[in-house]
Image 1 (cartoon, one colour):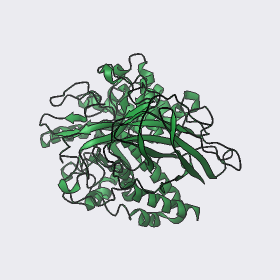
Image 2 (cartoon, one colour):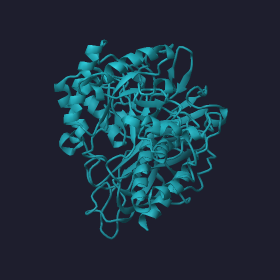
Image 3 (tube, helix red, strand yellow):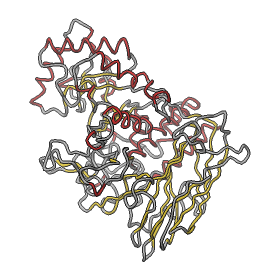
Image 4 (cartoon, helix red, strand yellow):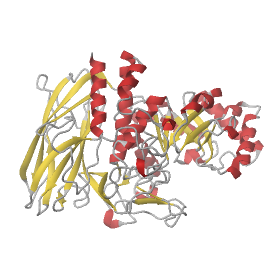
Length: 580
């Protein structure tokens, strides 16, 4: 069984090769070191391993010659288990228990002015290896408009064109036996078969947990104006569902988080917290079925949802704490009191913290969250900290007294992965490994849909052309970050009609997929930990992530591996430990 597409025209393709999901192959990089051989590719065949309920991904790179290539498309044969006759992805239900195969065209952004260190990396020693050129990121579904990433695709002369393939492995362990599943990938140019690549998926006899043992918290902004034909509630569900499938919690950017307590609204939202929203009965299919959100910010970035007086704050805090104690006791809720405060705001923070902690009612238990690293001057004032330069691991025990905690947010090499477009693919993968390694619960990412610039700088409130301009954040000091704040891309573009892809959906990115890969890696680590113990797992992963966070000075080079293949080798070692 194949995905079939129409073809036309003449073209020239000089090479086709494959690699895993842990690399970004620049459009002009025809001498990539992995093209001859890599962790999943022996030069002739693709071989990948995975668990039930895991999503494995790989890339097909098509190289063009001097004349370029016209009308290029891929067809994928569903992988077959010869002994049983079972076929992965053969069922028509997308993300159903039989698995799903998805193909995306990689979209490239030209970077000529690379991101400076700022809060993205500490010094030139820790910057990404290659920061200029045509960098792939947005992943366009093949049914998008032709010429906008939808099939067929034209390739410029002497260039690469990457295609991303997601294989959602089956969740039905009774119906699908473990073992090898074989298929073929066919590359067509103008309707002629140019190359056929065999591939094998080895399905291992273990189920990847639906629950996540580490949290990736992603803020997404209001994107309703990009989808005028879709009701707001459906847009919310779209963002949440796509994030959930990628093992991310999209919380904080919705009306419920930026309004005073309302019992009716919370009862409606409750389905996201108890997991019933993420079930087939409510239209959700895929990894994480039935698992709810673990985090709930009250207010975002200091919005005054609790009021501006002691009486108002205490009254509102009582309502929130009572509700969560009764209806969602397993959810970590908190007041996002303010964002990156200057010293001049510390008295304001102390005052409001005192309002909460002197409360004679249940609201006394309301935790206060702030985006700043632990500071002794605010010890006992802030309950949950999140540093942009990571976590001082020597302060973890101190911050966790009385139920507090310390997280990290965004990305800052060399302590953990950077979120900018120029970062290596594994930048977005390694941060979850670091969460596991140091026992940190949560990684907070400022934005996933920063399609309209926030209030800062020369682009303040501008709807951005995220498909053609890599610069997506710049402040009043002209400090900027390419790709910052964009992990999803819009399927519709009313503000730049020439960039409209014709689909009422959000598109993923290579960075988003690598977050998912890291989160899945952690679940594999957790499974192996149950068998051989945490210390042995740490010995294995320390081979590629020997140190991070405060063990690394901001002026140091990156200590963790920046090569995707190294992570694949450790994943293989974890699988071996699981199977033994």
